[in-house]
Length: 219
Image 1 (cartoon, helix red, strand yellow):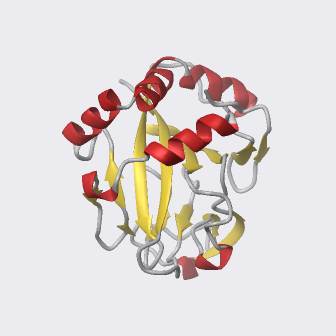
Image 2 (cartoon, rainbow, N blue to C red):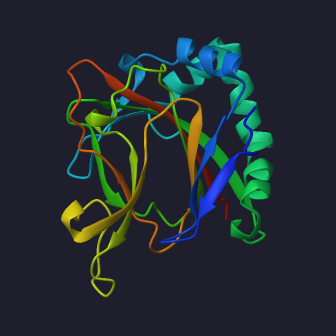
């Protein structure tokens, strides 16, 4: 369902890249149409982020109901569980994690265009690969609102920083992968895989919707 044929990776400050033309346009349009409403999501507020989540971890019963009620999401769920790990590891080549036991899952994510944010963080240790797929109608998201994934490098490499507890001022922004349709940001978890989103400055009522796919160690 996903093609990483156009994936282009950077190695500085850590293995991260952008995969364009990620899936068939018809399939992508279908995902736009059946993306779940925010009323089903769990609010993930706090000092570190302002976002909503629907996943195996957050609002599990609603997540399961969404999977079984929509053939598209049922098919995508099966793909993520059975095929995705092999596809993304093959695409990463030398950047792929070492052999081991892994599992995969995906999350429906939504952030308010006005004030949504995820503060600088490196992801938890169990995650090894993350793929972020914007779910957005072409031409409906203004880059000036923010919402891209910022790739960061600490200004002081010797200073101990804690995920979600440190301000953007402590980092240099290496690059930003803008929030655009039918593409994915792909990165490998490392000790310095700092990234963030926002804070966004879009209009009230608009949402930054995405799918987040994670490969995690399973024991």
